[in-house]
Structures are given as structure tokens and as C-alpha cells.
Length: 127
Image (cartoon, rainbow, N blue to C red; front, side):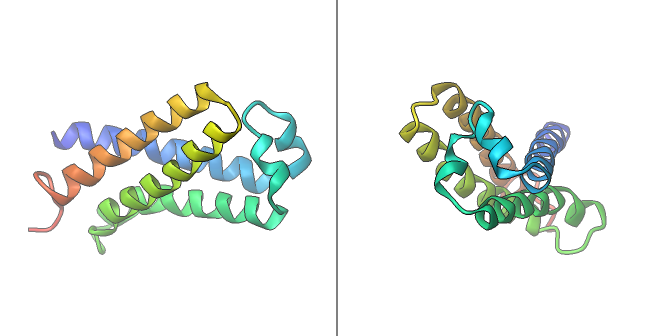
């Protein structure tokens, strides 16, 4: 179970890091041209960059607290926060009629729920 949680956490951290780097480094107009990037047309550049920074912090929050054994409770808390972000992403993509991205976000939501459940429960870092 612990190994499965680490694998899920690693996958989700890579997704969060990649998304964050993309949102913070690619111009808004270029993001808007990509499939699934239509949402950026309705928000400010600052909002896109903020979401990107939060995704990078989520990647760190999923891995670092457990690895360095400092406040490991932040791992499942970060997973819950990621769930909230994914619910927002699902709503946004539903409004834009992007069904494939809704499915992808549901997978990320399920991974985060698994991590939160596992790290708050049976495989908690808290002794």
C-alpha cells in the first residue's frame, strides 16, 4: 500500500510540476491556442501565473514534507487542496465542452483522493 501511495504521489507531483511550469513559462496567448487552453481567454495573466505557481507548490507539497520528514501531514493536506483545484478544473472544462479533459481531471482527482485517504488513514506518516 505504501508503495502504491508513493507511485500515485510521484505521478501527481510530476503532473502538477509540468502544469505549473507550463503555466508560468508560456505566454497566455500561446496557452490559449492549445487544446484545453480556452479557459485562459477569460482570466488575467496574473491568474494563470498564480495557478502555475500553486501547481509547482503542490508538487513540492506532495513530496518534500515526507522526504525530509518535516510536517508530513502536509502531504495529505496538499492532496485535498489538489482535489479542490481539480473540481474547479472539471467545472471549467465542462462549461467549455472539453469532455476529454474532464476525464483526465477526474483521474487526477481520483489519484489525489487515494493519496489523501491513504496518508490520513492506513499509511499515515504520523505515528
